[in-house]
Length: 584
Image 1 (cartoon, rainbow, N blue to C red):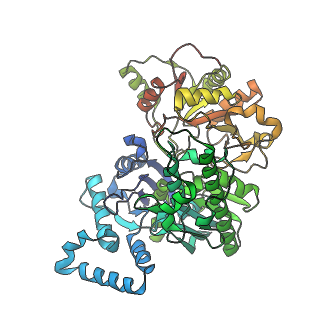
Image 2: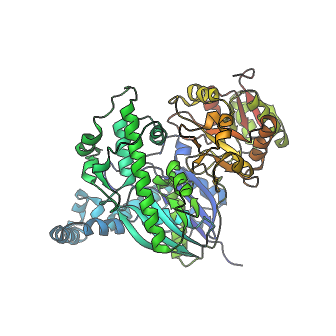
Image 3: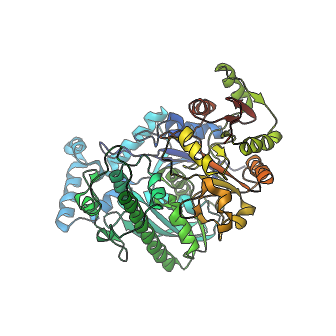
C-alpha cells in the first residue's frame, strides 16, 4: 500500500526590521488534495496578524489530519529569497550590479560573514532562508523540520488559483502589491503543469501599491471601503499623469516615499484626509479614479495574458483579485469566457499555492480538482459547544438540524439579525455561510440597522447577498458561477426593490451563489426564506465586529453576539436568544 504524501504550505515572511508581513496562514495537502487551511488571525484574533508566524494555523492543519510535523514530506513557503535577490540586483545599473555582487561574495562566507547581518537581508538569500527555517523550528518547537522549499511569491498565487480551479487549461493572472520584486505574473496552466510566461515587475507598476497609498491618503477605516466609496464618485482622470496603461507603467517614485504617500501622488489628489474629517465629493472622486485605473490596468493585463496563451478561461489570485467590481466587469465585458478566483486570493492563499508547487516539485502529481467551497477551517461539535455554554452560564435552546432552516428563515422574515455559526470556518476574507451574520435583504432599513448596531461602520456601505444559484438568472444580468462572493453583477431593474439592503449605488450586487451540495442546511434556509417572501436570497455579512477577524470559535461568536445588536445566535443546532424578537 502506497504511503500517504503530506505537504504543508505556509504563508509568512520577515525580511528586515519593520517589514513583518501580513496574513500568515497554513494549508495541508494529502496526496495533492486539500485537508485543511486556516489563517493565523482566526486564532490569535489580531486582524491580518502582521509579524506573526502561523503557529496555530499549522497546528490546526496537522491536528485535522491526525499527524505530526514528522509525517510531513516537505514544507512549501510562499516567498523565495533567491528569486528576490536575483531580481533586485538585476534591475540595477551595471555598476551597481557589479558592486552588489562583490558585497555578496565578500560577506557571504569566511570571517566577514558575521558582519552581513548589518546589511540588507535581501542581498543574502541563504541567510534569509536559514532565518525563516529557524523561525519555523522555533514556532513548532522542534529540532528539525521537513525539507523547506521556497516558492516564488507570485507562482504560489498562480498555483493557488489554477490547481483547484477544475480547469484542464487556463490563463493564470496574479496581481497584488508586492512579492519577490514582482507585482504580478502571467502563467499558462495545462494539465499538471504551470508555466510562467511573463513577470510583471514591481519597479514598473503595482496596482496594489497604488491602492494602499490612496487608502492611506483617504484615511478610511477599512481597505474594502475604497471599492465601495468609488461607486459614489465620478472619475475625472486625476491619476492619469501617474499611469500609462498601454505600457503597463506607473511613476512608482510618485506613489510612495519612505512608507508614506509620495509628494507626486499628493500633488495630484491633494492633502491627506484629516482624522474625523467628513468624506467629501473630492474624496469620492479620488476613489472613483483609483477604481478606474485598476479596471483599465486589469483589462490590459487580461488582454495581454489571453493573447499569449490563446485561452480565455482565466484564473485569478493576489490581493487585487478581491476587487469584485473589476471581476464583474471582466466577465460582463466578455474579456473572459470562464473564470475562477481563489477565495483566499490575498497572501494567505499563498500557503495553498506553495503547498501545490512543493508537491509538484517533488515529482508528485497534483491532478485535476475543483474547489467548490471554502470550508476548510475549524469546526466544533455540539457537545463541545454545550460545554462552553455551560461554563459561561448561557442558556440555550436545542433543536434538530432539520428544524434550523424553518426557524431561522422565520426569524429573518420577522426582522431579526441572526448570527450563524455552523460547520468549518471559511478560508479567505468572505463569510460564506459558516461564520455569517444574516438579515432580510429586502429592506434598506436592515442595512442601516446592521451597520449601526453590529458592524459599527460607515452607514453608506452595502452588504452582500447569499442567493440560490438556480435563481440567479431571475435576479442578475448574465450571471456566471460565483460561489465566493467576489464578483459583482447588475441586478435586473425589475428586481432592485427586492434587494435594497444588498444593492450597490451603481445597481450591482456582490452575491454568493449557493449550491445545495456545498452547504445543504444553509441552502435550505435560503430556500425557505424565498418561499415565505418570494425572494430566494438573504443578506450575508461577515460574523465579526469592525476591525476584528471573522469569529473562529464558539467563544468568539458569543463575545460578538453579546457586544452587538445581533438578536439570535445559531451555534450548530443550539440557539441562544438575547431578548424578544425585534422588528423593523
